[in-house]
Image (cartoon, rainbow, N blue to C red; front, side):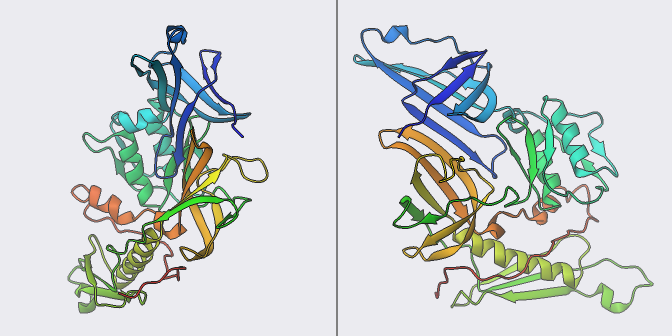
Length: 371
């Protein structure tokens, strides 16, 4: 059964949309929407066109607000039979994706992550909500020339393995993968799954990961502190020899190298297991919307899954097939940011920074491959 979709602009509600496409996820800073309606001639010219790019808008699914943002575009197309009028837009946080970072001198020292993020977002009127512990203060963060607000924030958050996304009110939200709790409804083949798709692509997964690095020392250091640090880990799911050698930058000891190879093995294996599931309707059995960043039980004997997975992204659509929700899911470990990404981005400015790789460990996944 279809669910009413309402676009609210300047206090006026627009309904009756025949095509709906809305996407929200933890790997995007701004959720987006694309709504359209088609009318046949005559009378097609009566379709209201009072919505303008730049208008503040809200998108509601039934009684639930899903998005607060701005109208980006109002496309129109027609032929000799019909006219199609659409409205496209994104969350308020889209300005952080599009626009350059700009704050005072562009440097923070000894500040907490959420304070730096709030300062960066404030220029564009975006409120910051922190759902997780962000750790201690950051020694130094600088805006790099030409980077957007989102790029600067993502670089900062990678050091703490945090993510930045948005919510229904258009706020920026700091999260960990899975920090939004659990979905109440499982994805089960033969019950609620209409369609499933998994690439099971292992081209970026290796049998052996080796990390090397060096630590600078002084004349007072013992000889061993100046030696090269090396760590190795093996992924037994890969049958043939596939070696990936990694070079760890910055001040490196053997523990840093160990954490790096563990992270790479877990992250790459998890990414290979990403899948998408399409279900009828936008809501779970308890009436709540499917939402990203929740953990969901996936029971799929066809692909070979019987495990808890992270809902990475949800697409809400309405069309000829009715009301559908398509969920991108994967093992949680595949969506924890790598601090090495942040280090590489600032290597030229901060050559002495040491990465903190957290508590990454090798885990087993539901699908294994022998190659």
